[in-house]
Amino acid sequence: MRLIAHISDLHFGSEDRQVAEALLLDLLLLRPTLVAISGDLTQRARRREFLAAKEFLKQLPFPVLTVPGNHDIPLYNLFDRLLSPYKRYRYYISDELDPYYVDEEIAVLGINTAHGLTIKNGRFVDEHVAKLERSFGSLDSTIFKVLVTHHHFTPPPGHKATAIIEGAYRAARAIESCRVDLMLAGHLHRSYMQDLSHHYAIERSVIVAQAGTAISRRSRGESNSYNVITVNGSDTYITLRVWNGTSFVDQMTAHFRKGSSGWVRLK
Ligand SMILES: [Fe+2]
Ligand SMILES: [Fe+2]
Image (cartoon, rainbow, N blue to C red; front, side, top):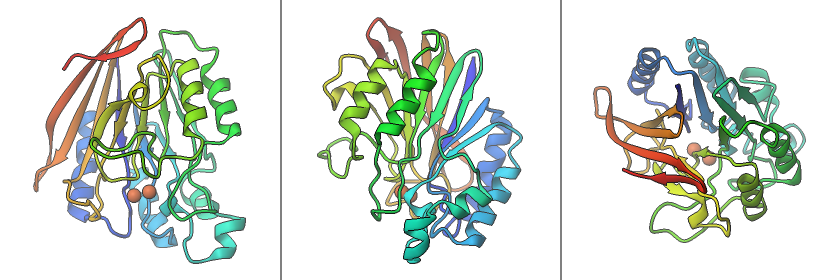
């Protein structure tokens, strides 16, 4: 069995200190196998914000996998934005922009979809598809494969497919052929679960779990939250942990079971 804590959009610089302390405590009690962070660690990519994010991550005695978000790239300094967009991220957080974690039960690949050419939108380029195929293509089918990006592949329920990641349709085919089980992302500050096959012309069912913002005050009407993923053979559970004003509590758990064409949601 493996436990993945999926947190996103921390936005240090606009974080709620009380929520940040509670999240740290929650994670220490949870003792996950891996903490996967789907980008936007900072509010404006300032040094002091990266430093605060680094201090937070230092207190987690677990493997941590992070990808940058659009807020982790300097917005106003055009020189840095275009020529060295990840300089501070690399210095304070991680030199690896497309990190990879693998053990006997799970494989988790982070792909950096943020870039300096646009303000908000993300992209999944040929090089990313090649990385996906290199990382997951030859793995045993019993290993649970997770793709982590900052930008979303599917819109929130009830919304049309607006501002979806560039290159998503080609990526979806690679995601299917590499038999990815779960996709984790953030960016919208909205938590929801979907199936990739409901939005793209693919046969295989792939679980999509979006996380809200874990600790930021930019919560866009939703309470702060994060996802806890339990991987146990052919059963996967995703629990939404929500801030209730004093602590993080379980709000709901979705149960998925693996079948011949991917994952089916039972509950
Ligand atoms: Fe964000
Ligand atoms: Fe974002």
